[in-house]
Image (tube, rainbow, N blue to C red; front, top):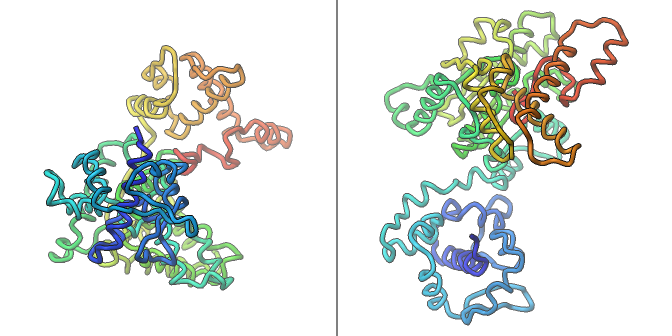
Length: 450
């Protein structure tokens, strides 16, 4: 359970020690503490602790009220700053109430008290701390430094990409059900990232370009995002079809800048969705400017490297049959995302329902009833069951609620997939599409992506 008094003193002590120790860096501050001190992409000493910064960093609603009764704290009524009147007494009070495991979560404290507390290791503490380069504030500062956001063309280019900090990705790999092949490929790439220097030393540079292949809703986007979260890497996403937008100016130039964004934020993950667009464009009568953009894209893929540029490139496609040889050979690993089998569907249902109260829940039976459904389809089924229960003022679900939701989902799905040419039928399908996606098929993943 959180202790407001202890939380505020730890924050104040960390800020004080960081200000004194010039050898410490932003990577030593816990992420929640760093977030309140970023200014123009930097964290400048000394760190000022106020009610506002302390509240934002610790979640304590009234920080000064929490610590005002301690004999070693003071507050400046004019500036609002909180400080120690007796630092030694504050340290003694704090260290009596925490153990090595608690201190290890804060590299600043680990660095200062490593020699005083048994079992405390600063290097291990720092290694476990999320690096500052993964913070939203740091990412925004790097983008502002590299691109003129007041320039209309530059702004349009940045609209081409969706850049997420790891902390903004809610999905983790533990939240997903993966095949053995997917787990193996992810483990390989994790090791490649960890041992980049060794791979460069032995000359193995053609590594770190993955192609995720499979139907919509099978987890391609979710796995890529979860990988970014778990590895503390910025996530740069672009949908290749967007390069044809009339609002994006010179498409080839913008493709180049997408890769520039990734290199500026490296190490990072660059996720390129709708990769089949490359093959479609190369084999069609598209405008010459678009074809130049695709050629630029292929050249940029050739030139980027996980080992040299610290950019992990992941392409994704729902239509591998539309890729040509030029697209395939850009990737050193192909990762298949099939529709989940019965066992995987049961595991998905267990994970998705972890926070739900369900009477007589039997995921194996439900898995048998959902042949052919993807992970995102299953989430939609559960969403429908929850909403139906809420209409009856219930927050406890039953196995029958889930069975009924499966039937409802399949009925709507059958309507969506019918080849209807009649206008009245089209209106019926549109009116019955409760999936939240106007596209055909199940283009929904764990967070409405594939």
